[in-house]
Image (cartoon, rainbow, N blue to C red; front, side, top):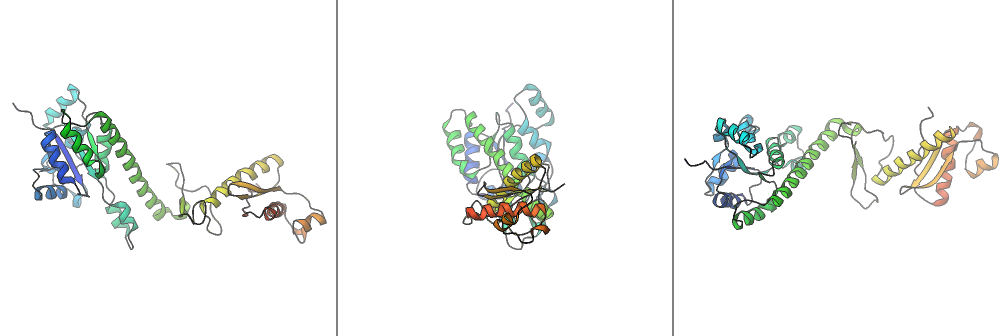
Length: 329
């Protein structure tokens, strides 16, 4: 009794080069192609023998195409090891192993960048099944070749047509698995960034005017912890650049140590993450008040004195002034 061929699952938004790859998989690796509806139509129209994924799952695409491949018959075939136990479970359910997964996503980044795009349009372009396919296939790289990058099509075609095994090498599968996880991670970061900016605003994401210097592109600050949804600081006035933010964070560390050591308010001025001036509060004589350019020194708070002293040091050095001081509590 002949053994049914293994599967190549193909679900791609960008269909460039997919006809050539699918033909090579069928002819050289002896697999059968199953594709999502849009990809299936493209393959069939270009003479590639293929089946719809729904012929495996037993369900048509649901919810306007939002549910296509999320089914045990697909993911069991991708995740199955070569053990007899796994193979027996596939046979008992009438499922086959998947050897190749080819997938690229809805154009989320382009959608978010479009003028006038609505939140519903953005959400509609968040790929769910495709991300799951890539992650599952990359996890089982020892048995499955996962292809997420169009530029790798030629590599796959060359390997499966030139190697006696009609398969890709382990080294190639490991490299492709890394790329798949890198891509899904980046893709998820785009979605998180969109939601962070749109739903939480400046509490969780701060747009910075530029990078280290004004001629560089703008940057963005957001919490590095995956569980944090709020920045640990707020900008009360102005629009800082990335370098200003670094100055602020470094100044905060310095004045916090000064405050802890001397138990008085402190201030610091920074220029490109280097301290240009640092000072603590204290009583000023008339001469010192003139040096620090303070009028009515008797009405000046200790915090203002520290600020003025750090400011004057900064002016003398002709550096950009950034003064920071901790709460007096």
